[in-house]
Structures are given as C-alpha cells and as structure tokens.
Image (cartoon, rainbow, N blue to C red; front, side):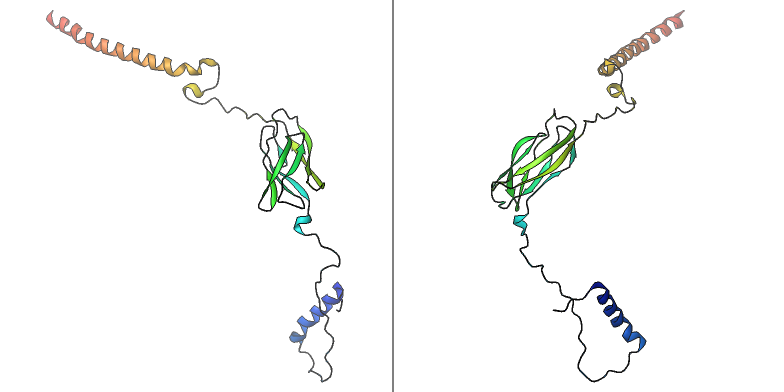
Length: 193
C-alpha cells in the first residue's frame, strides 16, 4: 500500500487536471510511473459495534414540571429492559423498542427548577448519564378583555351578563307588546270626541 500525504495528493490531482488542458508532451515508451493510490482502510483494532455503544438521551432537554419527556437509551443488550433514574421523575424502566430502549416519563409537578442528572443503569452494570433542565412553569398571560358577555375579563359578573341581557330583552318585548295594544285604544277614544 502506498501512503500519500494531503499535500502530495493535492499535487497529483492538480497535475492530472491540468495535463489535458495544457497539451502534455507525447507519451514516452517505458515502464509506467507509479501512481499513488488513496485507500481507506479500517484502523487496526476493535471497532465498537452499535450494540457496544452505551448512551441515554432525553428529549426535550429543557421542560416544565408536569410535562412528558422521551427517553432513548442503549445498553450492550437492548433486548432486555434497563433502568433510568432521575430526581426529576424517579426510577423507571426503559423497554426494548426498534433496537433501542425507550420510555416516556412525566416530570413530577413539584419538581423545582434546576438541572437534574438522568442516569442509565444497564443490566450488565454499565452506566451512562445526561442532564435534564427543569424550568419554572410559565403562566400564560391573559389577553385583552375584548370579548362578548362572559369572555370579557373583570369580576365575577361574567356569568350573569347573558342571563341578565336575556331577561331585559324579554321585558322589553312585553313592554313593546303592551304599548302597541294600548295605543290603538287611545286613538279610538280620541276619534269619538
């Protein structure tokens, strides 16, 4: 195997690209020149297989109390459950699914804001860990009080606005009917005089 440094490879590539453009000298008879070959051989030694990779991931890595997080993990043997421990959600089991170990625990409602360690404990004794950040629960702000009836902000009268409005409408209709019946009698009496 011929080893070529980065600089030599760049020079060989530049020469190969410019020779046809410049009009290279006629070919000469003789033994062919040695052409450096770039080969990618695996590095000697054991390569880690995907099953040897031990890790734990938490998604999302920043969450409010009371929300679910997704956990993906890997041990040497992903066909048996493992354990994940954190002060944010307690001790849970991650179950085999699609070649990985997964779970979806809920961050406890009373978890205080801060960074919490999430530790994977494999059955073979291997461990891995990551961090989960718990942030303060954000209360959504109230929008402007621009609604109709009960949607407008303010005191506890929002529930009374619709019934009171309906009652006033009925009273207005009754007064209108009574007034329309009395008006013709008044006109008839005025016409007889």
